[in-house]
Amino acid sequence: MSEPARWRMSLGPACVLISTPLPLDAVAAALRSRGEPPMYDLTPAPGAGPGGRGAASVVHAARKAGPPGAVWDSVRASLAVQAADGEVTGEGLLYLAYLVLENRLQRSGYVTLHAAGACWEDRGVLLLGTPGAGKTTTLLRLCRDHGAAMTGNDLVVAGGPGGVPVALAGTRHVRLRHASVARVMPELLGLFPGEVTDSWRAKRTLPPARLGITPTARPVPIRAAVFVHVDPGYRELVDEPGDTVVHRLNLYENAVRYIRGGSTPWLAGGRFGPYVPPVDDPAAHAGRTATLERLLDRSRYIAGPPAAVAEHISALVTSGTPVTASAGRSIQ
Image 1 (tube, one colour):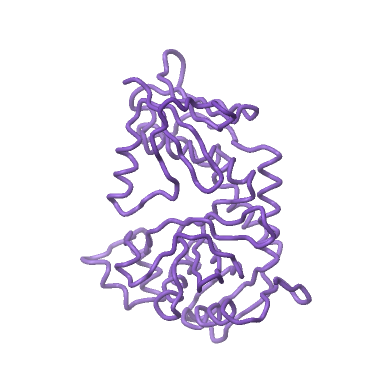
Image 2: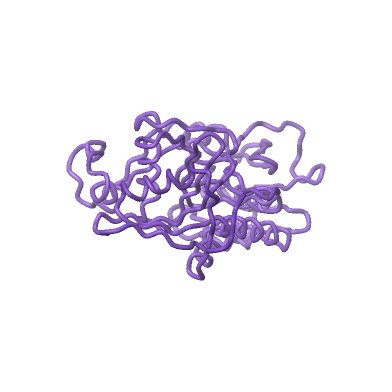
């Protein structure tokens, strides 16, 4: 391995200093070139050694003996990674660093969620649901048919220390699944050229402009968090309280997909790698759950035909009527 360089990964109030011999600038450039620019900023940090001035850190060093591995020091907020050439890639190391960044974000009341987000000026909606529920297709309809801008798709960083959660950042690409498009937006099937043999696994990643969508990079207050389920077979629209036991548990699982480092294995050379400890602590838990409560307070479950779901969400968010999670609870 070459001599380590130092990098600063930052997003909102969170920062992680990374020391590694891997060329992280080239890795970030490759992500951008394939249409998947990261949400965070990655800049050189000469002289800013990991661990300095109380910052969180990731220190990647060549493995000299024993198996590859990672050790989390919660007191120093430092992840030590030992791996020889080929045992961890630059992209894999950025993923591990994001676990530490997520710890810092959650301590500040932000969580990274598998979600989509749209907004009208200062009124935003967070779209939640299981894979295939229709988050992306609803986002497309809100933007293309109802004049919304995109705050993020696939991943959205939401929350903050204030009483009203905000969409802080989101991924700036649109990933379409052929099966979902065929079911609810067949007019977009032309984006999948050639024969598709596996409709569920066939995906395309596109820049928003290709779909006539305008992204916004500024933080937007979240007026409603909507658990969506689109299905052309529904005869009527369903609009129910969003704060149910099932949604509450699903949202929590969504919020800890990064903070629990062991939940996604470190892949080394295409095979399962070593154990990565949970990058969590009581302060992150407190910030995380406080934000999830605020999102659930303004949550709804909306299901039905795709166009009807989008139209209803647009009216819900842009109207002057407070969005409530259940009867008798008002959101200002």
